[in-house]
Structures are given as C-alpha cells and as structure tokens.
Amino acid sequence: MAESYHTNLLNVAACYVERLQIQITKTTLKESLPENPYYPSNDTNDKRGIVAKHLLAINKKNDPLQTEQALDDWYLAPRKDYDAFATKYPLNGEVKQQGAEIEKMKA
Image 1: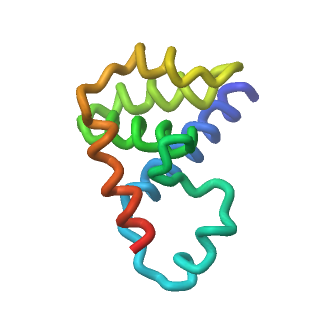
Image 2: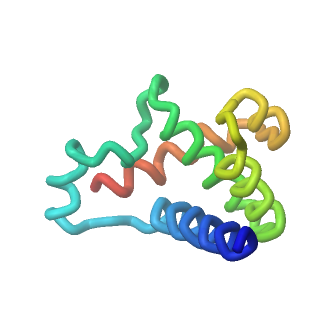
C-alpha cells in the first residue's frame, strides 16, 4: 500500500514538473491563472515558484535518477524546508534561468 502511494505521488510530481516545461498558449488557461493558487510565479516571495524553478533546473540536467530523488526529497519531506533542499541540490544560477520557463507558461 505504501509503495503504491509512493508511486502515485511520484507520478503526480513528475506530471507537475512536466507541465511546467510545456509552453502554454491557450487563452482559457491564461485567463484562469490569477485564480489558480497552484500556479508558480517569478515573484521572489512566491515559495511555489522558487521550488518549481529549482525542480525544473534539476530536471534540465537530464539525470532522471537525480530528478526522481529530488522530487522524493521535496514532496515526501514531513516539513518543507527550501534552504535544506537547496543545500542538498546546489545549483549555480540555473534556478534564475528557469524564470523564462515560468513566463512562457503565461504567454
């Protein structure tokens, strides 16, 4: 049972990261974005946005095992601590580069 839950959680997280990588152009989605509490932004105070950008940057390294481990580490953590997560998965500016990916979703 726990393994099934873990697999389902991984699938949901993987789908979320995949959706973040897709450039979205449908106007109906653009119109609904302000109402969507789950949509990450480039606002420096938006914790969802920084986590999403960090996961995107990890995924861009094309190491599926590391991406899977990072997803586990974030989504299965009993307490979400971005600083600890960022220390475990250090990046050199790649997170800031993902802002364009977030903006593409709004275009």
